[in-house]
Image (cartoon, rainbow, N blue to C red; front, side, top):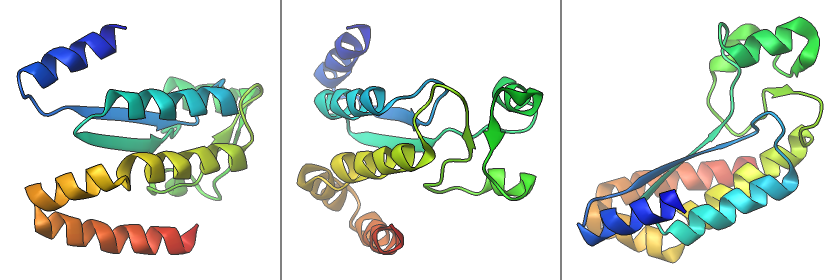
Length: 143
């Protein structure tokens, strides 16, 4: 409710709004990720940043995993620093990595590739739209 009220106030004052959403948090389920996508779409923000949760060395999440509460899915510690749509760890009680990766892809498609977002980007910055189209095309080919 607080987020929705804040978004309403920002829109009233024509302040651009960016939402940051993460997938693959500890305890994440297929249902919670679907709820996140629905909520983000309902907010109808100006920009969306969608990320995969990463347990960086030194973080509390990384330490939990290293203490045996979960497992890293990367081949080397350096792989943690690569951006992308791959789930980098697993813990008991969270959705399987394939489910998380699927929800992440759906979020990107449902939020970033909506006609309204494409038109908004095209009007605001045509060069960004062209760059984004190239990235989206390559990304869709990989998935």
